[in-house]
Figure (cartoon, rainbow, N blue to C red):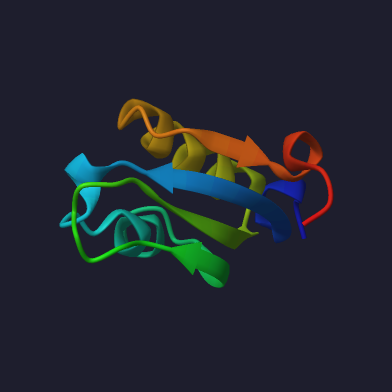
Length: 88
């Protein structure tokens, strides 16, 4: 098995701004980037006037995870990785 096919996991926290409440951001990580997503915690109000956040476990190849994180950055969403957030 080559290194590019090895599955890894990465835990992140992503802030979903109110502009993206109606967008399928998490779904696109699965469908477009082939990631397996486990939502560990979340807060997203129904009012659409405040930001929300998701704590996610991403599973995929290093390339899939890198591409998925690039997608979130293209949307200009704040993303924290496990090291930056500290104890979860």
